[in-house]
Amino acid sequence: MAPVITEALILQTFPYAETSRILRLYTREHGLQSAIAKGANRPHSRLGGVLEAFASGWATLYLRPNRELQTLAAFELTRARQALGCDLLRFGGASLVAELVLRSGSEERQPGLFDAVVRALDTLEQVPEPAVERTILGVMWQLIALLGFAPELEQCLGCGRPIAPAEETRFNYSEGGVVCGACGGGGGGAVLPERARKALQALVRGEDLPLERTLGHWRLLERYLDHHVLEGGKLRSFEFIARTLPAS
Image (cartoon, rainbow, N blue to C red; front, side):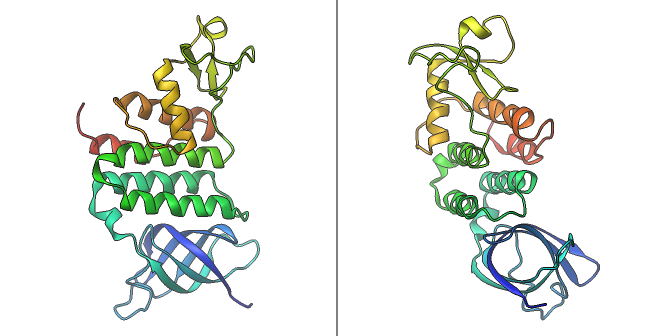
């Protein structure tokens, strides 16, 4: 079988046996793929020093239909992103991005999503320190939208009425968006004041803005993913980020 060469991003890597390594790759042409890099952990392997999480490059793969584990023949590194591993919050954000793709991606070709994930990691690596936290929140909401789960923030999910600019709403996690006071005044969901709703709209659109308080945004993001994207699952990286963020 002839190998294929595709742009690839390493989302996860772990050792296998004594000399090999298993990789979880997100590729431009073939979506999510699991691959074994045989001999990668040997002292003089040409793969050993480049197969690290969050690195990008050109992967040479032997893809066999109906197999869960493919074979990596070569990996030409183009960007290592080592700075992500030197800062706990940046590392946590990159891990959150990778985990979302691992949980929600597929083997289908999605070049737009692939480019967005690469941009997200590049941004997290380069953004100034004071903006790291809000950048993580922003790139997560943008990826959620690209995956097809963008929250409805412009009109009430109950009656369909456009939300007035200064109107307080509630965020309905299971339905995936806001409800007005008349439709959700007596129900569950987090209260979403005007300022918080506008901030969330900006995050989804990829606009950079200061966030006075972020705890509520983290809670909303985690619960939204649990209810609407992961269907009750959880991303473990949230726990790491919670331990990393300074106490408010």
